[in-house]
Length: 474
Image (cartoon, rainbow, N blue to C red; front, side, top):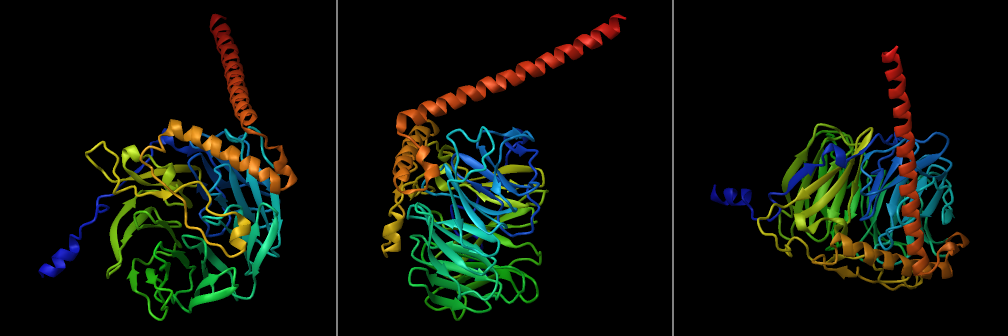
């Protein structure tokens, strides 16, 4: 009896994680979220922007909004609209907060450079177009530590790894998956990838040796889609369905895939569980498509390994979900995760905090985390080198003011380097001062435009009121 009680009150600083949805004025409203039937998250966020895949007539488009651009989004707000078919997946580059990649039903991958303050006009010209898939491209994911390395997976059951700087397909894995690939993730230093496939197998692959390192057939018995992600210790976490259509969460050791380390049964809902993992705290958040809740678990090194923490529940089901990297969180509020939940017509931030009485920096909640610097150049990685993430402290580097300055410098260094080896479209990037002044100019122009709009709307209002007055006078 007592041993059982002890299990129930397991000590964890994340037992009281508190989730809170943003107030209405902090949401992004009046957005037509994409209705395409594909199980990606439809949303990607970083410390500067939130990107959302939207309904678009005649092609595919996504919105890129500066984080602070909350409220109602005008129908005429500029989009990124170069694809000729619906966009299926988007991913921000971890080493440059202005670079985003997209995969589409038009079989292409495109890489875009977003201006400093967001879009002023719609963007149809990508920096580079990557062509090599013969069917729609549903999965896009950047390498975690090497610059300009991007992975894409398509419904042609192929995985392609690109050097974005040169626009070349460097590695093509074509005979490893007999069916549709549900998801692909990198491990922490990007030396291995892990895939979940419609044939119910999960595979751990060394992409540079083009070889399957570990494989488990029928990781989950059910026929619905699975997901597989790496944890920071190299183990693999999977979500899927049992034969009885119960949703499951399982943990595997790639050195011995015979049996799972543990399997947790959850419920019988049929939405695919999208896992979001925080390597710093070892907490995994499961967001089911069509669910109205986020469940979270802590992963530990001792059995039973997976510990249910709590559920954050709302009334509305989620169409998709974005997950903010650690460096975009507010450490002063003890925020340990932030999600961007997609409804049919809006995007709602959800903040997860660990309530603390002290105002001091909570270093147990914020160990050093992956920063925006890359550890390797693309060529080094393709030559066989590995590099662990370059970690940064969040103690003072991410006070928003300083942060913005720091990132602008970062961006320019990357830009000027980029111009040496990337495609012509990128040649327009110029040295530091002009980008700053361009950004300033853009800001001023935007302000002038919004003032003009305001003046014209007030003029209309005055005319209307005058008309009403004249009617009354009569």
